Image (cartoon, rainbow, N blue to C red):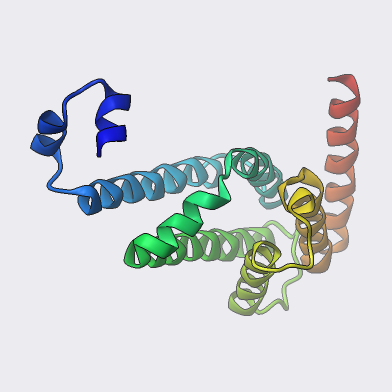
Length: 184
């Protein structure tokens, strides 16, 4: 609390007028971060993108989040505030699962994804794939924090669920993205 009050430029007494203790402060920060991430992804999925374009936008946001991610924060949260850690994990799973599920439904409606897909099962499989990329020693820290790993997971997922029309659109988007990176 000394560090927090010093960083905010206020006294500990003033800080304690706003929060009861360190646990309440951590809870507030966790709630704020969950709300922020939900809002960020909500803006993507409430836009006028088609299902594949949505996933390209998600990929951009994920790349930035991976760059900004500090693994020690989650380690400390798990170690010192396990209830808050579980809250973060559940909220993240819920947001990711629901966004994947809605994206699959949208993609089917648009004719970009295969009609015979089991929506819930595919959403859970993709969520599992994303989570396990972080929770394994198969990938190095450099691979996990690079844009390439999640880009490959993302393209792999889209190719697996797409119709011919969806794959054609994907190929077009990949070329556009590569051209934009070359011209940047």
